[in-house]
Picture 1 (cartoon, rainbow, N blue to C red):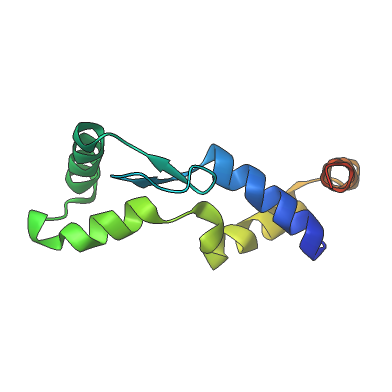
Picture 2 (cartoon, helix red, strand yellow):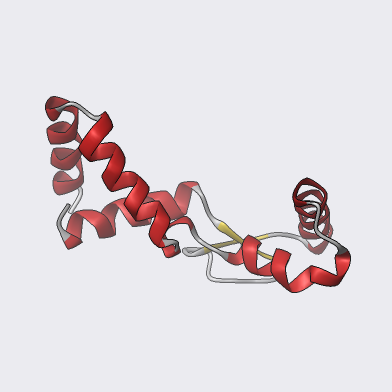
Length: 101
């Protein structure tokens, strides 16, 4: 993928898988939630992860992350394109990203 194709894909991925904030944020980069919804989501994440309430900063950091900020996300996408997509699918995917510029 070219840098331009990655940028287009990253914008799409961060729109579909947004980070969350408990207050007003940049709506292009984050999904602001009402305080009660953010608290409920945070509690769900704490329960699923088995994290204690004393680790509040950890949950807040997790919820504010974007998918593309993680290097593993890019590596997983490139691995999928290289090993799991056939040549026609990969060519079509890259064509679409190129057309969106």
